Amino acid sequence: MDFFAFLAPIEWVVAWIMYLCHQGLVFLGFSDGPGPAWVLSIVGLVIIIRILLIPLFFKQIKASRGMQMLQPEMQAIQKKYKGKTDPASREAMSRETMELYRKHGTNPFASCMPILLQSPIFFALFRVLNGLVPISNGTDNPIGPIDASVASDIESSSVFGAQLSDIFLRTDDLQTRIVIGVLILAMCATTFFTQRQLTMKNMPKAALEGPMASTQKMMLYVFPFIFAVSGVNFPVGVLVYWTTTNLWSMGQQFYTIRRMPAPGSEAERQLKERQARKRAAKGIVEDATPVIEQPRGQRQQPKRKDRQKGTPRPAASSPAAHGDDAPVEDAPVEDAAPGSTGPSSGAPASGGSKPAPKKKKQK
Image: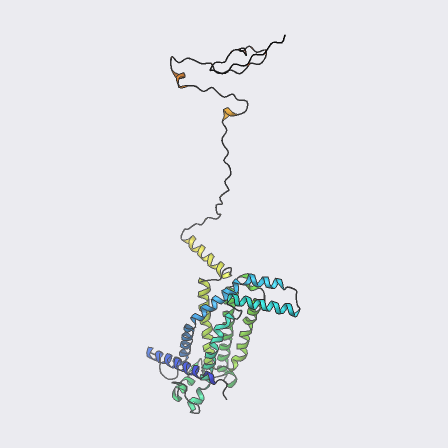
C-alpha cells in the first residue's frame, strides 16, 4: 500500500500548473522541449501557490500580533508559578497557558502554518519529479498532462548542468553535486533568514522572552538543520521550488514589516525614524517639547498703593470742586492726640459727621 496515495490529486494539480506555465512561456518566446522553460515553470508554480496563500499569510501576521498582545498575561502566569517545579503546579501553568491561547485565538505555532500547508505541495512536487524517469520509460502511468514525451523533456532540463531530476546521493558527477550543494545551502539560508526576519525584527522586546521565544528560537535553527540533512535526498527541481518560495516569503514579509510593523518592535522604531526624516525633508518641524498647561489657581488681586498700611486715603473730590464758584469743604479730620493744636474734640467735623460724645467732669 502506497502511504502517499492521498497526494495523487495534489500531484495532478501540480503537474497541470507546471504544464500550463510551460505553455505560457513557450507562447512568450521560450523554446519548446528541454530547456529553461521547464525550470521557470517551477518558479511559476511557486508564484501561483503563494498568491493563493496570501489570505493565510495575513492570518499568520494576525496570529503573531495576538501572541505579542498576550505577553503581559503570559508573564503574569510565569511569575505566578515561578520556582514551582511540582507536577501539580506545572500542570496548572500549562492549563492556564492553553486557556490564554484559546482566549486570544492564537498559538506559538501560528508562524509555521504557511510551511505546514505547503508541505503537501512540496511532497507532491517531489513525487512528480522523482517519477519522471519511470514515466519517460513507460513503466509508470502519466500524471495529468505529463506523459512519456513531456516527462523526458522535463527530466532533460538542467540548472547549471544539473538536471531537474538529479539527486545528490544518486549522482557521481562532481559538477552536479556542486550545483546541488549550493542549492541546499541557499535553501537552508533563506529558510533561516525568513524565520529570523519574522521573529527578531517584528516582535517587541517583551515577546523575545519566555517559553514562546524559546520555542521560536528553537524553530529558527531546527528547520534549516532539517532541510540541510534531508536536502541530499531532494531532486534539483524541489530545491529550486523551496529556494524560490523562501525568497518570495522574505520579500513578502519585508514589505509587510516595513509598512505595518508590530507595536513596540524594532521595525516600528525604524518606521518612525523614516517618517521623521521625511517630515524634516519637507520642512515640517515638530515641537521638541510639548507645552504643558499649568493648573489655574486663584488670581491674586493687585493692591493699590493708597491702600497699603500706613498711607492715608486721599479725599474724594466732587465734580463741582473744579468749578470757579464751588465752595471748598474741609476734609474730615481725625481726633487730635492729647496736647496737639488741632481742632477740639467737641467741635463737629464738617461734612455732617457725628460729633464725639463729651466726657463728664468728675466732681
